Image (tube, rainbow, N blue to C red; front, side, top):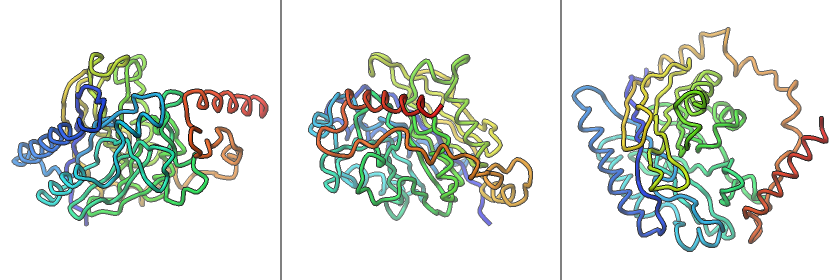
Length: 333
């Protein structure tokens, strides 16, 4: 039977990077946070899983794919992921990296917003943001590529439990997080840069609302790491932090006080208890109660694929696709 352990939601506060040469300093600091957290909490907690925010390495700050590819994008794996793997091997831990802007030669005309789960034996999964924050984000979704043959919602089976991850805006789409749950995820990690005013402070505390809702509706733990960067470091947005861990009933187990800055919160993960509850429950087991056939809306295409051709994803084409989607919704009502 799986033994309980602790997860750490680690938030960062870096200035917005302009060049890929700045990534190394961020990796160095996040490696320090991993070591400080594991060693510092060792007398009290066995920290085995650590998650970092979206944009911790680089953000899609440029308005074209070409600029992102030329200035910030990296191929994965690389020397940075090697450093995380060395730490994971040293401490027997699992690290959900902050996101990278990724260039993959298999898809040369696009870039992705990508996070990796890294364990003692190496990279366990690669997740590419399925729902970019349009219109501003011009990196691609797997949905944009007609020849995309990889699993959009991978789940890693580990000694800590089955782990899935999704990035920031993905969490406003219950379909995306539920797909991770139906792919077997027991722990859902949120790698996020969730800006004000949609943070952890009422009345617009979407951050807390959706983390709790996705946990309860999927009977899953949620480990959610949010940016704590300043307005000065990431204009025109400020980042409210509030990183948190939520249990499978939507209870907040730990949460950083809302506000800017580096913070780490830890909380227990009991996979045996989760598995018992998933097996035991007949009521409030929304996965087994799902009446798939009565929800035909998912069979209707709404937001169309970009097609993946050079220049297909721009702020202008994102706005055109949004307008087209609104027309499709209007025509169906």
